[in-house]
Length: 210
Image 1 (cartoon, helix red, strand yellow):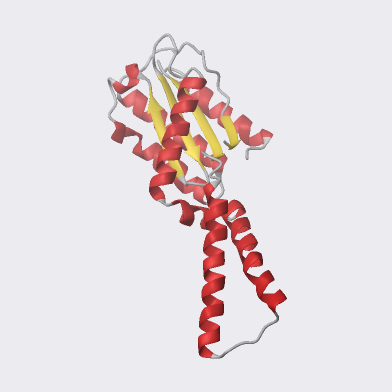
Image 2: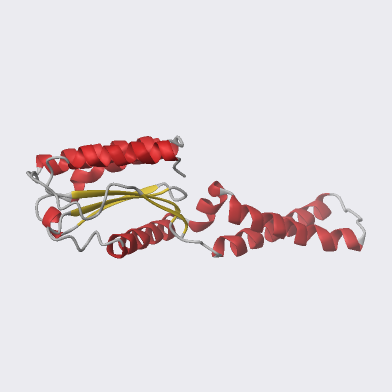
């Protein structure tokens, strides 16, 4: 997802943002939050249903006489094409999944990253995760208890909006840099100034098809 130059840009943005902050910001970007195996089956089933419907309607409007071998191959071929679209095509995948399934998957993956990467275990309990999942086009900001005590969830909206807009244009690095800057602004506005423990590093976390 990110090349070396983009990783360096994000790293520099985190280092700059944390200067004078008593909190640690961790940007993270995943290709998708779940493998979503169900989209393969759903895509295949939908394509088979469409293919059968097309054959039925065509025969009603104008009877068609096709060799049995052609009919036998047509429906499975449609199913394979649908399964491939369900696996590889982002728009089709999102359509098959629906918003609730994607939201649940992104929320679950963000929480896993938050705890697995130690963002919830800093000494000051002031870690902030910016989690972006590209397939689902969703961004989640999770903060540890010291930050939650001073900042309402609505304060993260500018960071979420900045990341969402840039990622939608294929500019993931720009989105992460902007989200880090907006997050730092919210932290400073809440008075979380000082010096962080530097326990989490400045590198962005990247993940594939989780």
